[in-house]
Length: 331
Image 1: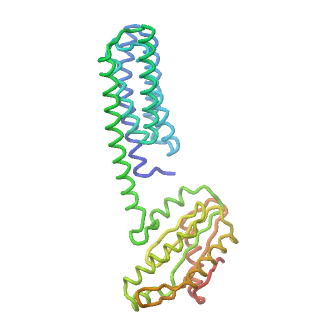
Image 2 (image 1 turned 60 degrees about the vertical axis):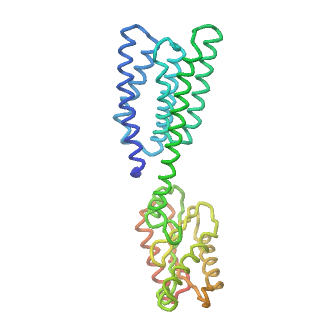
Image 3 (image 1 turned 135 degrees about the horizontal axis):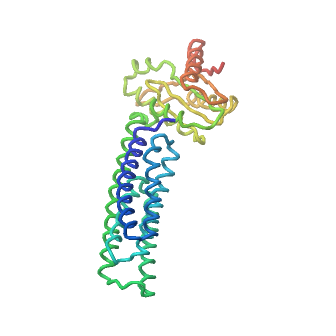
């Protein structure tokens, strides 16, 4: 399945990050090779090789492998930097690169993963410093240690604040793109995305169209029509069915996707919806507005094209409309 725009942006960020890290690591690998620091340059050449493979392969990866690699890449980078800290301590400036862990992890793994990873790295770095000091492996002033740990914590805090704000913005933008503003149900765009991600079969599609909705608008006004749409949306959401999503497809038409539902289970849900709407007219101001709906059902036992499934449900819905309304048609 193709990556979403946001996921493709993440792939581009990872790829650019890997290019930068790979170039830096290669430079250090050459320097350490010349100086004969074998353990470090072997680790750097290994990281360089992994980076090269990633640069050429990542565009063809699925969402699953992009997420897995993001974590693996950050873990390898963190282990490498902690390994350098263990070998060299504060004898040169290599320990400064520890501050790259928080911002790198936040950029390519996100806030939840990085919070744990960065905390773990800080904890391990403190242990390494403590062990080296306790066994007098190196002599380092408290000021030098704080000069490393405090910038690390500072960059970590800034990265966390930035990524939290970014996550909130992404959530807001995603809601604007995938939610209907009137009913707060998923919209048609989300319908296609959610169906594309479905891996559970059989899957049932239920299309629901309110009967004589134009008459409600003409008789009671568009405010009343909006009230009816929100009322019906709330009714559909109260079904509380596991892994079932409800959508407003446009106008007075709703849809429900029901993974792992066979025909009888789907009919039970549809009958419950019709009964609830039929038996609970809406009280709007001084008016009582009766509500009924027509439902068309289509079911696929195996992966299928969404347009074909929608066409079947549409045909059944039109048949329900043409043969009296307030009914269910599934064949």
